[in-house]
Image 1 (cartoon, rainbow, N blue to C red):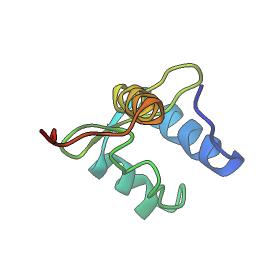
Image 2: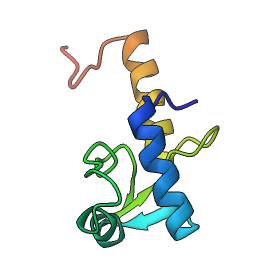
Image 3: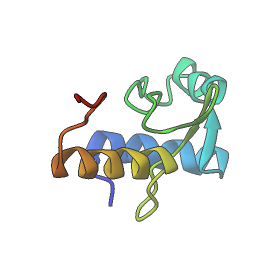
Length: 89
């Protein structure tokens, strides 16, 4: 489950209701920002939600993004044992 604060949940809701899609481009997001329909969701335009160049997936309830799943797996592995870049003989 994705932990979003109230403001972030409202921004996701506005974007989803307007575009009826869970994948948006940076231009689409910025268009609503320029129309003053929402504040700039810079938190959304990060690698965590990126699916392609300039394309982002909205963190809808119960749906984790592919990048978020990858980050969780990497963090889990890193907690288990330290990363070894080379082996000493």
